[in-house]
Image (cartoon, rainbow, N blue to C red; front, side, top):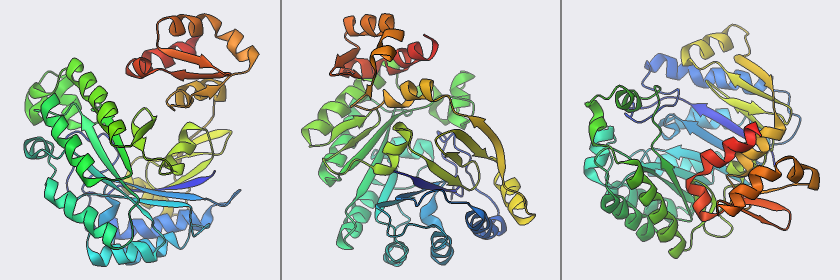
Length: 365
């Protein structure tokens, strides 16, 4: 199943934990960006008709609806099987919702991250739990019930108890899809950099311990399963039939085309990445450039383990492939971290907690 990803890197404010190529930019650049995207889309040579669409960012929910509609009109395949827009709680209005539906969107992914006021305030988020509940209700009233809510485990001031509060809100709202991410610590976010430098800004000194984050994730697996949401990928949980086909293509190595600043593409053979700078991307589109910063051959043998083992279903191995990795497989099966059944290799529940270590073994064996 092929898909399209549109990058909209504009935000009302930059969250402390965010390590994406997004931020607050001049209004003039935001106005020019839609035209730049349409230029790139119109120049695309489509080898296939996309079945899924995903608009990420940034906060695409703030995108001018007329500009959004004009941009989506350049994407073939409508009506798409799944067409998602990421939304910041507080951005949804009846007017925007009508425009989204008219443009062909049929799924909304809310970047909630937490339902606890103190945790939200520390990260720079402005919404409340009540904001999320009200907008989920608004979507349902409009007939758009395919909703995802994101949570982050490991935020400053977060404890297992407060994470449990957020999970209870998730259960109460009864959405069909939930994503649970571990806080990423790297130099690309203000919070991550502060943690690495052992500073105290942005609550860096009050972040949860690794042991607490593991406990949060285990609690999420347990509580979400009780609520009818099964884990189908390390970070993603869904009711039967609501697994995201767009997300699944990344883990099953299906092709997708990315458009916009810092967007990535994969055609089954090569991986491409557009320039990261929003201003540079717009300038290139306005002067006849193609925006591509890098294009490399994909290493499909390694990537199959890297992405495929993230899925609960795992990956199928031939006898030759099993033989090439026999030592690692048998060791991890013996340790209770991998399961080998019916020609399928998958992580156990315990193995999910050590997934990075397990997967890395296959990238070097």
